[in-house]
Length: 107
Image (cartoon, rainbow, N blue to C red; front, side, top):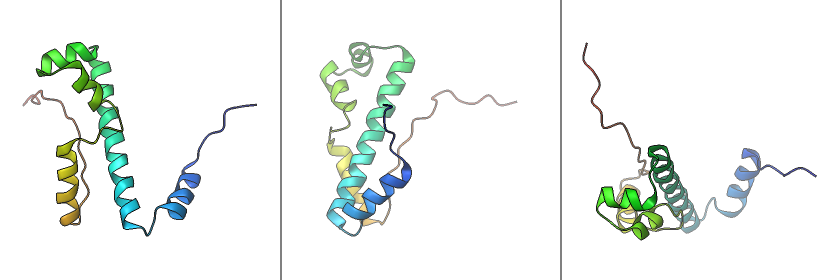
């Protein structure tokens, strides 16, 4: 028997059924999505750079355990919580992306 896959339709149904309309659940869901996205981005960037958590920690000037927490989707960083509160107050959503630090060449 093959592995079952989850469809966007099923996710939408679950969101509508269990989250939509409950502001506390909606906020918790949004925070969970952002935390998961950030954790995945940090992990992917670190992996693409070919660094271990220890090596990245040394480059950043922190500890391996800090990097490990940041790569954990369940980590609830204090800065992200504050950004979410500010965004909510302004009827916005936090979106964070990493872009190349290299400046584009001018022709």
